[in-house]
Amino acid sequence: MALLAALSCARPAWAQVAVTYFPFQSVLGISSNPERRLWGGVTAQTNTFITNVSLELQGMANLKRGDWVNYYAGLGVNANPVPALNDLPLVNGYTFTAGARIKPLSQYRNVQVVFELTPYTNAHFDGGYLRTMLGLAYNFRRRE
Image (cartoon, rainbow, N blue to C red):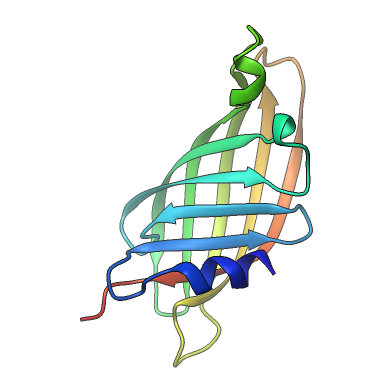
């Protein structure tokens, strides 16, 4: 539902962004054009209290781009801005992301299935976990 709401508000003629939703993790993401060599994005946890919403800022590089799939990797920082207002640390931890954006529909390359393997470590580098995320994306590209 969140992905459909985001899609209905977008203006494909002007935008050059992608919207991604990972339903199993309740994560919504917005990124710059993932078809470019270098791109960035922000993801936010949904279905939680506003004070618990974590944001991840990520910088990505496409390692291999193709008609059917793009493979990428990048680094990110996980932050929680609301507790930072109460003198708590802003940065929660760091991520390394390796992923694939699969374009399964030949006539609709903007519709993508996204799979990411994203190890996370806390800010002190003394704990972490391995995340896997599966979601859907739509890439709003300028009309040519």
